[in-house]
Image (cartoon, rainbow, N blue to C red; front, side, top):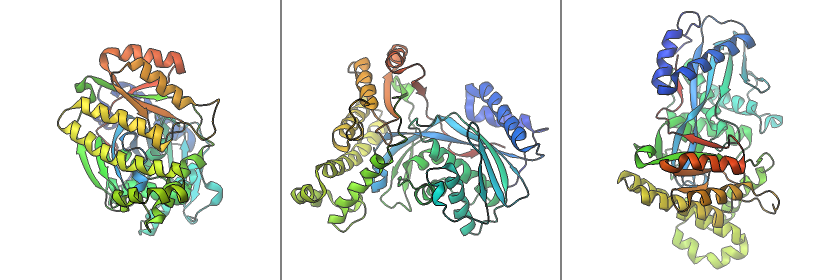
Length: 423
């Protein structure tokens, strides 16, 4: 596909696409897209033809840290997204201006790994471009301007949304749309693992790329089994909330990396690379030796993975039979396991700063035995997730923000569409 949208004549067509994607929020989103087009022009100058894209954030509903062990997850895209406008520049350079951040510039004749770009968005851009070029994609230079409602550090994976967004831009404009949503997720993971330097699983990218609520089995990471679930939390009388604990996870890379690192030691005992390849009965039989050689935390983390894989299956079955009480019970059990076994609520040695633990405790007190809450995503910092009965939502939100700060509790919905081109 080519750049087909003209900002001067085709905005009504974009408005129609906005209305289809955003529904009742379309008027507000239309203003947002006008600002996006204005940002592209103010940054790079006027363009006769452009293309417009959106990629959503994601929420992990079940399966905490199971994806990097080729486990099972339950995920959903959410109604917060990163949007982009892209235009050709006639050069061998990609320029990406994300609103509020320094511009990223990637030379298409230099797509090797740059160590100085580790943990920077330029590495994501370079890694995705490199993947496409190696597949024979005739990639050309373009300018892109982005703006995001997926707040950084939200646990909604703004990084995966950016990866899916860039993948969609290149796939649509230069690769004839050959890549499926699953492949675009895998490309994003490749860039994050190899270029960005983060040993993440595939949950984040799949949640953003696929759209809607999906359950994914990563037993074969190259060919994940994806199934859609049609379930509306509001129909069950609950709202999905994401609560920002206020913690800063910028210096916690070692904590996140220690989870797959310790599990790798457990797997090595059996000559395997991921826990999904180790039968649970073999793991339990070797428990005394594993405790000596790998340590108790590694053993507990492995137990969490086995148990949370089962919980995902039970969550999916509960939703399919419309048993929301059983679903909530599994959410609570997963949260307890993450805190007790996975131990990704409080970073090791932290005493004064235990923001996620405080957020969970306040949340449980406000829910008072109803709904459910759990640590969300990577843990250690960032956010928690809560399913809140609609009749107590107003008071719950007020209580969380009184304790943690204004704007810390976000009421979200599952978005049915993943990464998409709008014009």
